[in-house]
Length: 358
Image 1: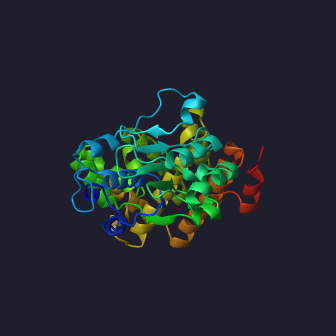
Image 2: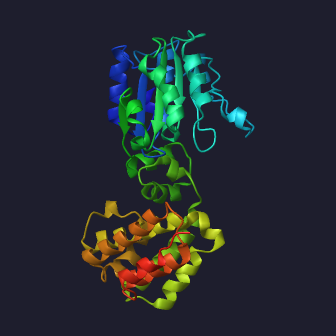
Image 3: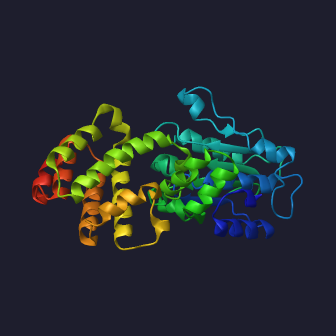
């Protein structure tokens, strides 16, 4: 039942109306940020279509069909041939396909086309979920076009993506799109507490740091997050106090240590979040907008030295470096230059000299 899924009431209503009218499209595109529940909604739609004891237009969630659709049989091996197969659920008519490496292979799309043309084995319709659909390259996308152009009446495809702009226009034009919004921090916190997914003392902070993503709220260790936040808070304190060069360069060293390599962009994002929190407090914005609520007292002290123009400039400079990460940026000198420029210790033109590509 859709009511058991968190958030996105508009998407729920649209899917309910589609089911009630018995007009589920042959091809759907579920787009939205990572971790907002798109795949769960797709599986719920598959259940509703194939449920043996439907409650109106929705699945009962308790029959053998519903329970088997919930269990996806992912391969236990990383062998390329295994990853290119359809991952069937315990229900013979519902399967999931994921990229076999960096992109989908043409063979995966041909598997879907072949299977989609079979009649259902036990349910009302065959149902295929293509996860991370934006990772189709031109050949694999073109291989999927035929089944999207003429979907069999007893088959449905749901493409899932957080980057719909990466899909070919020919794919987009053949799918009915449903947009999924980020979850509110309140929705995430309630879900975490009601399902006892994290300790009660962590739920509020995880929810506020999740940026609307349930997946992000559940990922990572809160202790590690607080350790990284301490380093970012020290940077913000140094910036507000006038820019202690030694502190900033030492922080740059920490950011670029090998053990922090995988957290580099996340740390920049965390610094942005702390700047925004301080700015919200400085302009007496809503306390509910402050992400790091547990640091309100410390942020209030720093907020006295923050003005909107300066904070906006800091965020712009961080974003500029983050954009450079899509290419091979020499991170250490780029980070040094970023922090010194933010502090006013180096001009912006000098900072650009440090951002090199290898």
